[in-house]
Length: 534
Image 1 (cartoon, rainbow, N blue to C red):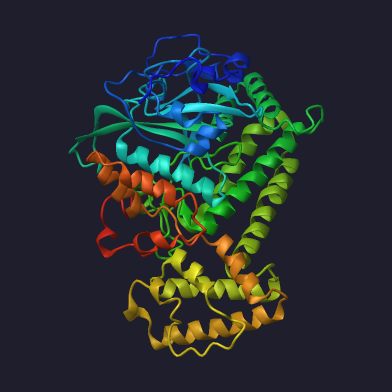
Image 2: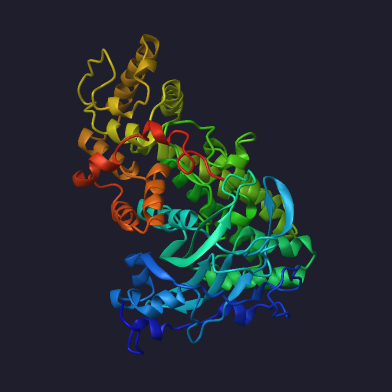
């Protein structure tokens, strides 16, 4: 590594800390766990670590910050983004927020292991907040240590960037740093904690504000501060809205609803399951935020959740994500009611800007997944419902099935006496392909071909539409776990290779196909980290 010098871009980052400048701070500076009232944040510094070393950085995020390769490979970069050094202009803080967790109000939560270093404005006049996850305790850590382990940090780093390249709105990840210190964790919550390698991720986003930032203020009856925070958010993150309009808060809520609807449609498109859709994990900007026990559908099971805590209730299962987002928006509407005082307008906005937009977006997305350029209610409702039912009858890999479906030439009659050769690799259990199943599948192909012929799109255009809708490569849990296992043994090559693969998830990448374009192996079906997570 090179020593960072003043001419390096890292030393010239332009900080403009509007959040801490314009909103009230916790008056206590002592870093002790407590209830924080009348404030939006507490100033707190990261905890220094013993021997930090850079595992990986994302060059695309570095570009957002006007940082070059030399800066990212410098000693100063590692020191700053491990929390050991504070650059001139940084103003570190942790945010105060609350939230509904699994449907119940949990009171104050806050940034328990996240510390915002500051806000930079880049050469394109874009505002980016830099946040360290796993950099030590804050006043909101409750009984926790504020640290993060390597396994969760690798998953967050890789998935943040994977989602961006998939076209899914998300927070970003600049860097992944090994702290050189062990962290004690009870991975299975069975009373047998073990030491694991510690790590820190630098997350980057225009804002890390969540529904819970507003909920905590409303729950305490602090209307004045709720209004200040809402006004700040609109001015800073929604400047295109008419700030002088009488219905400005309703306009703002409408856009939050629309952004959230689009986000969830993207999740459903690529088979992503967040796992913890609590209101404190819902971004006010409609970004995917907080990559905890997330997962990707392997076999198409709408009731699957990656979260062991949710394994019984399945509140946050794949098929429930649209309804849960709506429920969370209802809680936000209740929070904003003191600023709007019109329940009818709030309900109408929710119906139009979320429910209708989500339903319309989901229909268009599902039509695109099977190569139709538009959704026709009379024919396509049944066609798509029948397909998703069929996918559940035999254990079928969602990613591979839709990607391979594009390879069928349905402009010609399909003579099907068995599963088409192009699709066979999507099935986990060939013995489930019974005559009854095949008959149902063949009937669907017949209806599908008939619907295709009724449209105006060509077979080549259909294939192109499907290939840019259905990714070939996603961050399957077992792939992330393999990279984690290597990194835990000092080999970061798995992280680097996955980061490179996931930069082009819709491209064929034939050199990667044998290793990465395949179903979850049987050994990973129940392996910790590869199936469900806590």
